[in-house]
Image (cartoon, rainbow, N blue to C red; front, side):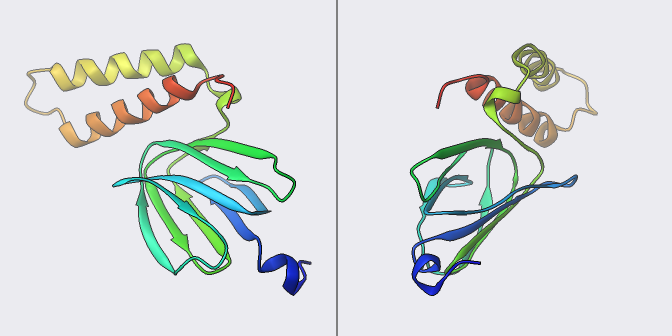
Length: 142
């Protein structure tokens, strides 16, 4: 359990997907992709709720180690000493299948350029954003 001294300098970061609690750990900082751009969170941050977008979440641990996850649409609940990210999906860059991401991006582009009336443009756009984020960060040294 964290002491008062330690907890005043750390945040509890939880990344939760529909399937699992992917991460539940203490960190000193978090950088998240928000709907309006990236934002950072440090201990004692003002409480807020933010929309997240597809992009790279980076967390720095107490010993300087960094963890990165590609996250997608969802929400981040920020408190004075905690950040909880509820996301559609999340994965470490090393776990991303680059070819699969490229195929998904191509399928999304085809749907967006389709002249069919039943194409859901919002879903196709979101799928393209997810695929491009996965493609960008796949196996990339961070």
